[in-house]
Amino acid sequence: MASLSFLSTPSSSSLSSLHNTTPSSARIFLRTPSPNFRASPTKIFSIKAQSAPVLTQDDLKKLAADKAVDYVKSGMVLGLGTGSTAAFVVAKLGELLKTGELTNIIGVPTSKRTEEQARSLNIPLSILDDHPHIDLAIDGADEVDPLLNLVKGRGGALLREKMVEAASDEFVVVADETKLVDGLGGSKLAMPVEVVQFCWKYNLVRLQELFKDEGVEAKLRVGEDGKPYVTDNFNYIVDLYFENPIKDGYAAGKEISGLEGVVEHGLFLDMATAVIIAGKTGVEVKSK
Image 1: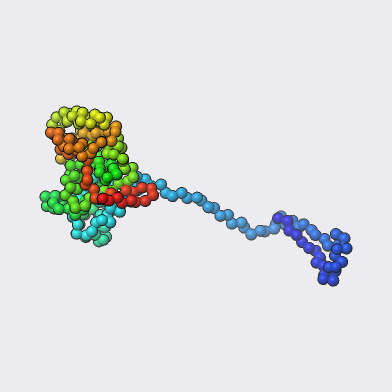
Image 2: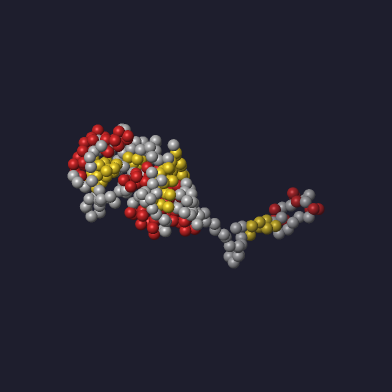
């Protein structure tokens, strides 16, 4: 970088004559640093723009599950749901029991899968026969409509879930925002119906005929081995896939239940007392 250097500075007495001085009497040189000039090292600052982390569906489920556990108090009898979201709830309960933040909890599991998880976390367990009064049940949902009606049971535990949750003073649902629908069946994913194994195809045909106006397709649920999926109660599941949402959930539930050989359906109507929904903007609680 070039610098300016004055070789002579005029005295105060000569200032008046400076205007008459030729340019050579006040010489100004442009001086360029020599090649071995040692400048101070330059500091380079690097700024990286960091976007907010993208939350996965499991992240959202865990957020909702953690919020739901806030409803739990020591000494409660709890209904423990089934499914990926409910698994986060059970894991959190095990953690709080281990640290002593919760004590004297008794869980009533809704499936063998949940029972195994709870036992591995040393959560004390019981059954409805011994604890017919449940303080609080926490479970996930496959669909949630604006009135907090639900579709549940894609995890295959709809019968035990409905029994436990119907026996609970409060039923808190945990879900992520992808489960919200305008009308039940609106996700076009499975709405399960548990049926006895005897003449299951007979009931599959009747269920499909029952909802022909909704453009339903009825399918027997099968496992990874290609064999019929068998519930903890040794029944089969017929999954109903709706092209259009169910017009009247209460009427639909009544008609399904009226079919001989149907054990239970996945319409959980007027049961949830609160629904905790985790979305990318935060956690929202809806209650009646």
